[in-house]
Image 1 (cartoon, rainbow, N blue to C red):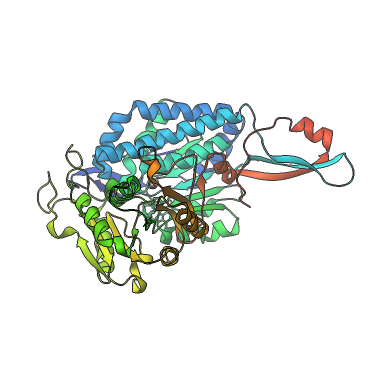
Image 2 (cartoon, rainbow, N blue to C red):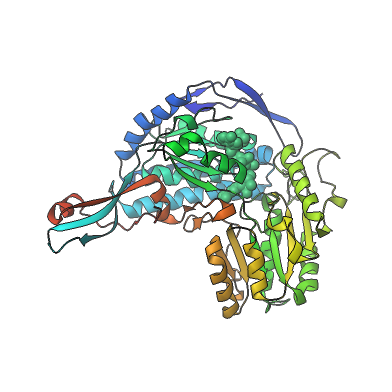
Length: 526
Ligand code: NAP
């Protein structure tokens, strides 16, 4: 049985704590056994701080960018076996697996380019020098330098490759070493990628360590120079943010958590409008891609009341084309969810939604292809409709992390806005319309409640990537339920891993110490 090992202090170590079995979620065939621990977590952090940090900080942004480029290329070169691993361990279809793995190498390439653009410098300048008094000598300016601790990354199960690199690329480019912990259930892909990085010696010693299974006492050992970035459920996120050591040491924390993302069909759109097709395509893709296990997936579908029959019929017709089954088959478009526990959780969530909404399609006729009946963690794409949207509660409160969405009819733009805001803060919502007035009302009404908005209009047909894809150039994160965090967004991501410092002094000295203008203001994170 494959027994993946943590990689810490420059070596792979055998775990010693409680074995956890990993299975293929389509066939339930055993794949691997993961054991946590087997090393001193404090030593792993020290190794990062004493070996990885100084090695990275000795390099320029351009040089660190080249490290990322090499990792992206290594992942791309190993794409086919990595896809096989994602199919087996994650229940991904081939297309889902590519989405994750190419997302990782694409993010690495984008941050490699950013490193090149920032250039041969170790310091970021933030804004211009400003005169502080009447004297023309006394000036101040802001700089940003890498924090001298460790970036600890705790990741979710749904994107083991992309989730690793959307965090690690930013930390490494900023000059911080990384300790990454993948979700246990789907850890094989992240483990294999770290093996590739180690085998090919793509990073300096201590720049990247992999902790499998439990974090144990890792968080108890964090310091004020460290960063903790988390992706996963709100519940775990709150636990980590409230961790006594994290609070006491003012460890910088970023949370990416649940989100009840909405799609709004504008009142002007119906059959024949390209933007209407965009809307149908995005909703159904988000329900089926990765079996709906995307933090950005559309969960709430706001449809004008007088367009309801048409939109319902068209959505159901497209959903009916989905083929659920063994994701290693070419004809299958929807694989299983990642684990038995996840399937049971999705079923509980659907029951909660079904208690106050009509179920339009779902598990009733589920017969996954390519697997014996009763095997695997399958859930049919499930569409519900709010019978009484004003009274619906669960749909605005509970994220069902599977192939599930609910239609909510609305009468006015204000009603749609109020309904979306009931989600309590989200990662992304999308609005489909060709009327600029409607798009403006929705964009301004939703911006404060989201990290990202997608405006789908007819001219975008054939040009746009849907709202479910997180792009390295745009920020990812959102207020409230979504965790209050922010990742990616090009150079903005560097703000989390750097310390912004104001420096006041004699202008000629400041100019001599920090001469180069760089194009990279870190984010405005306080
Ligand atoms: P989860 O159960 O909260 O687990 C997330 C990570 O936290 C895993 O690595 C898990 O490790 C670890 N963990 C759990 N308890 C911990 C503890 N007490 N101390 C330290 N680490 C702990 O979430 P999940 O089920 O993997 O992911 C699904 C959720 O993630 C969904 O709600 C989804 O919306 C959210 N998500 C959000 C985003 C985003 O960017 N906002 C992206 C993807 C997913 P083990 O696996 O070893 O338990």
